[in-house]
Length: 280
Image 1: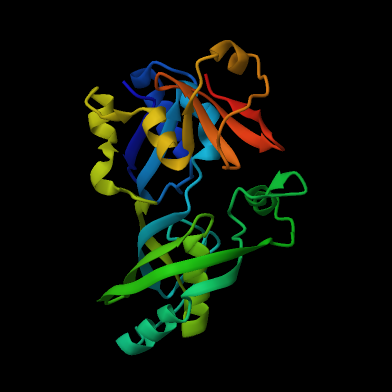
Image 2: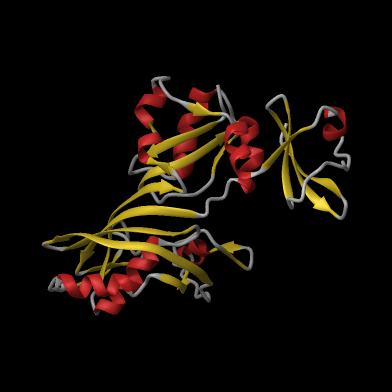
């Protein structure tokens, strides 16, 4: 039995709600995830529980893939269909070629203004709290990368596209910027995260199956050993006490294990290694 779970999150619940539902099934109160999905959104979520929660910072993904549907003629304060309506107007769906060219223009590196409804903190307060208090705040700007973006369908009320982006990219904000370039108003009406790095929907457990006790979990060792050089260190007492160690490696960070039991992440400190995070 492992302590990392790939879940296909259903729509209509927050990421916190999902973790709360999983607690009794997994028999734990120590539970978290590696990336939030909005209530509207569905798809891949990586849930960590028990000691795997300590490894959250080392499991940050490099890229995420999504399928998004855009509804034209409706502008909301959350940039998705569940928000308060700010503007409702007529529209004409742009020609296919214009949409494709506009999507293509977002390929590569760019700057993105973080949406007000996000949980990013500014001066110690989450952005959505400023919105709830109706207070003005300067929105942060992030560097993002769009690795791939493709139009998948044209609808009577909008269009759909697939996109692969760097971690930390807000799809709602990307849609906002795409629509601005198209000279349209609109919002996200459907959003599905289809992959986190190489983890796809096909590898995920449905919430219904998990609640029935029928699910596949993954061991933290199997996941971390793919990301870090792994060194079996027999003096476990030294690791538990956080002592500096000397090992043969040239990597900045290494995974210390003993007989496939994850112990710690160590970091290079001159000629030796020091404990960065205990994981036992």
